[in-house]
Amino acid sequence: MKLDGKTSMKTIIRRAEQQDYEAVERIMKQVQHLHVCLRPDLYRDADTVVSREYYEQSAGSGVWWVAETDGTVSGVVEIYRRKYSAPVQTARETIYIASIAVDEPLRSQGIGHMLLQKVKDLRDEAGLDGIELQVNVRNASAMKLYESFGFTPESINMELLKEEHR
Image: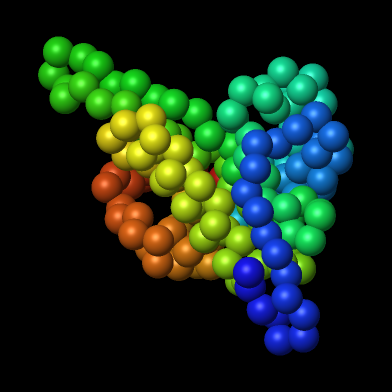
């Protein structure tokens, strides 16, 4: 239970359900807008970020998890399992966080941390080797959250853009 100074808010993490689509799409649009602001050369605003068809196909499979605060979806995480196996690599299996987002008015209240804890619990329950994600280096609040949870940079994507794209 997290206190916001006035009232007590109760947040739970659960598998996403079909009826969560509108809330998930609303929150994913918020994160898409942030991506557009940070990298307009890569991202653009769109009427739909997560298609209803894709969501409905994947919602019950454990790909989508939501934070629910006082009965309302307040955050979302989209995860996949990744398996690495090659003659020159150590075999391992991880959870990859494709997306994680918290509803704008509820950010900085511990919901993102709770979503990450759920992913960590899922990793441990499945006996997997780690959790991976990508983050834009300009997204300071996300970087702070991940580092406070114990994530460390292990590889860096670098780009050399044409002049007209800088």
